Amino acid sequence: MLYLCATPIGNLEDMTFRAIRILREVDLIAAEDTRRTRKLLTHFDIHTPMIRFDENCKSSVAEKILQRLQAGESVAVVSDAGLPAISDPGADLVRLAIDNGISVCPIPGANAALSALICSGLDTTKFLFAGFAPKTKKNRREFLEKLSTVEATIIFYEAPHRLKNFLAELAEVFGERQAVLARELTKVHEEFLRGSISELIKNIDEPRGEFVVVVEGNKNFQPIEENPLEFYEKLLEQGLDKKSAMREAAKKFNVSRREIYNTLLKEDTK
Ligand code: SAM
View (cartoon, rainbow, N blue to C red):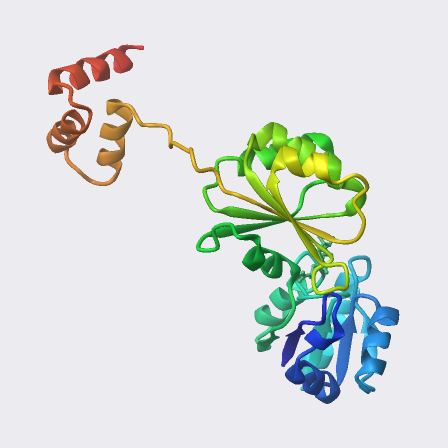
């Protein structure tokens, strides 16, 4: 069994009873940073052997872990904080395990994105986790533009030294929307800053600590209306005969069938 085990994102009391038991019982812990995880293990009196499993050594270590899983051992993956595989290593190992018939099991617990969302006061019924924005300006712009039409609440992770710049670009692409900065979640200096994106930019001078950015979805998004011809063609693709498709398209756009027919003829002669 491969366990995906949550660890605290700041407050050690967020370690679950089950996580402690599993980390004691498994044969091996695959940790993003063994020195950091060592501190956690010492705190909870856990003495299981560890292997380093980070972004740089992923594929070779993943193979070793797979061999041990195939030999019948159990392994727990932990990242530095929160849920492994969420903006942290783990997802590739899960894929590898599944492809090789190994069962995977979540050991849930702290996660920065959901902790920020539930305290944001924004819509929690539909949300999209966007993680970290790309580092290069061009890719970041494209990434934000694609997200700008999303109606669901959007959650980003961002490093403190990039936060102001990120918010400025967010304001340019998203416009004046409500947003929340969730800072230092579960820690002594936990705080939530709420307001429009530009208000938030004004209110943070030198961002310190860890941040989650939660942004209201696009409430004014209007999908581009199809024209009668596009609608007619869509109906044909769906299997309707020409006559019925023509009739439906005419009805929907309040035009005559002749009008659609003439446009079709024009398209054909182009
Ligand atoms: N796997 C983690 C999780 O489940 O939340 C996320 C790891 S990701 C590498 C680190 C980012 O998560 C930080 O840059 C920050 O955006 C966010 N984060 C982690 N801990 C946080 C905390 N205590 N308060 C606010 N944001 C946090």
